[in-house]
Amino acid sequence: MLRRTADLRSIADELGISISTVSRALKGDPKVTEATRARVNEAADRLGYRRNLRGVNLRTGKTFTLCAQLISNPSPDFGDPAAMHLIQGLIAGTAGTEFKVVIRPVANTEDQLQACRETVADGRFDGFILDHTEPDDRRAHYLLERGLPLVTFGRTGIDGHGSFDIDNEDAALVATRHLIAAGHTRIALIGPPERFAFASQRLAGYRRALAEAGIAYDPSLAVAMDIDVRSVRERVDLMLQLPNRPTGFVSSNELATVGTIRACRDLPPADYARCGFVSRDGTNLFDYLQPPVSSLYFPLLEAGRRISSGLVSLIQHGAGQAANELERARLIPR
Figure 1: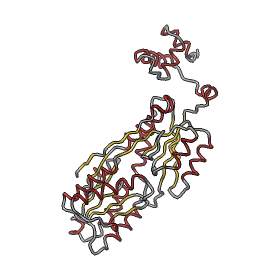
Figure 2: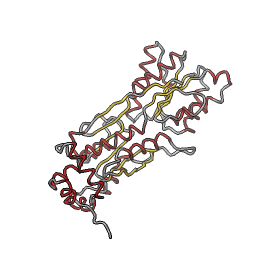
Figure 3: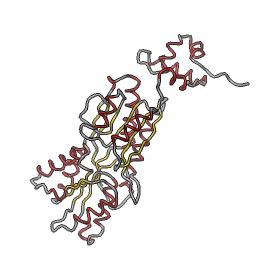
Figure 4: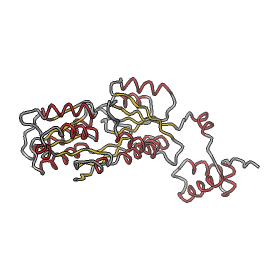
């Protein structure tokens, strides 16, 4: 005999409470006590309750689908391991909710605003996640003007949306100080294109550390570029041909670091041994590779989780729940 699908009434009858209380508890309404919410959720699981999302969609217009529009830089060699960690975190952040995340990769050569317009026109999404933010980001303005919930990975300087970011200035400051303490005075910064907000933040931290140590800033050692292994290797190859070449390298992610190391491996062994590397990492890749690479680490799994869970909260509870979080990366000397 087939078991009848549980509904709000059957849960209410089971617990001896009103249907409206059951409904509010299942939505996570903070006005319902934690104990009652726990009882309702336990009974819902035990009785096999499944919310009719199609019916909710018809009544409210909600799709329970989030869009993460993530900028990607296609690589001829291999992909970015940090990007996969971020995606895994975004998925984990919706666990236990009715929301799902759709990943919308956008090549860095595409018109980012137009890609955003097309995604909104699709009409399938309750909220949006953007990465690689720019100051006064046009995509953020576009979404907010249409009343669409938004959480960004990175800061924009715009009010009205949630954000999560790493303190990029501090990370570059600590990384550069670490190399200076190891005796390096010619230190290169391998960073992203200048249009991104975190590029200027990292440059500020790098320059601050140099100034503290009385080391003159040399613009030829500060590289702003689209990051892939091959391009970074080629750019660092050119830097290593300078008469007074760098011996220390602060890089923006795992791919930049791998490309930098590969370029330095072409140096004479004694010169290569004197090179120092510090990477801004979101994975533990360099626990498994040689040579040892110190890193400024914040797990992108955790970043992704907090971004998507923050967007769910924003959708469920309104703009008053738009949190703006800033975390520091941790130096891991290797």
